Length: 50
Image (cartoon, rainbow, N blue to C red; front, side):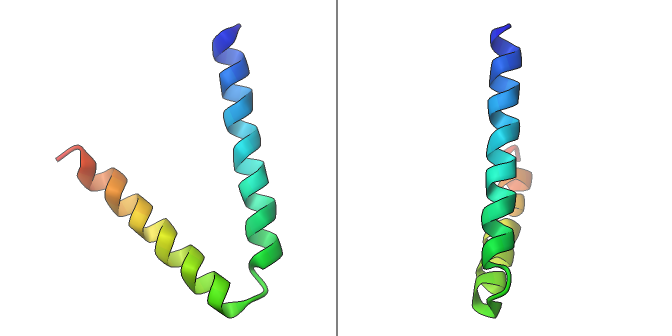
């Protein structure tokens, strides 16, 4: 039961992030920052286990 609640909470944060990203995606500078942060996070996740 606790795992289910944590999973739902995690899913809700992704939707909140989606709506925030869509609202600022009309600005070009925001798109560049979002892309840079996303790429950095993927690199960190990929290289953290090495």
